[in-house]
Length: 400
Image (cartoon, rainbow, N blue to C red; front, side, top):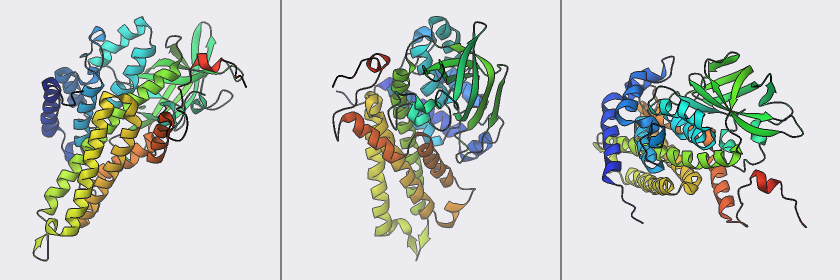
């Protein structure tokens, strides 16, 4: 296997790095997250038009660039360095792959080209706070219990007058307050024959009520979504659980690369600062204790980068790479706050933004121990490997 990146992949990273360095500094990030949308719309349109960022991993047949998870991961590494507030994760890493895997051909041709051009944004809406479980990152998602149960809670779907109508609530939806298209996980069939299905709901649908939530990390905006007899469009007839798990693995690889980019940037800023800050007449970076601490963080970040790159090549390693990357980001951000001294604790400095990103992502997609436990379970580290459960395997009788 050739582990080096191609010239085209290096060009994607270089171009995106140059653009974000010019357009997405700490002040610009803070200004963007305080807008009604929560991100810089002109910058997002520029990224879509010049780089095709939303459709980077989509096939050319549906208006995408035709690249794969590796290119998306490289792009996410650069957006992570800048803490870019954007619909990229929800649209390109969650919604678009699910629509590509489960949507009908008319649905794909209707929505994917517009997503690829940046004309539409999309997200995945899951009941409660079970996004990580729904994606199979922290446990087995086959039973559908993460969707709120069939009797009450979560989102229910029923057919009436030839239409699917959805009723319920999802409280923690990435970009839920602003996405133009929602992929909603809902229970069908009542309690005794409950089955989780995915539905397409337009952002302007009647009966859809949305509100932006106050979050720890403002750069990762979330919304509360309420559905009151909202008309939804069923996404094909395939079992959605395997597709959700596959999407979770590729999304974890992208998230790992994003966290590595953020950790590398905050570590670079800290190393530069300790060379300038003086105590007792000498830079604090010359003290052996400081050198050892930063050397440990450097090794941790490089190990996380290796894991993230491997996961971009083999998404099955995405969960473990994400655990490594989130831990590296949290440690690097904590060191940045401490070694910057008093200024590191202020709102004016950017160090707290990176620490909040690490903490928020671990709440959304972790925690780290569960990510590692799930990876060990799937690999059979402490027993036989857990095979993914499908509708066919659940129908088989157990023979004893």
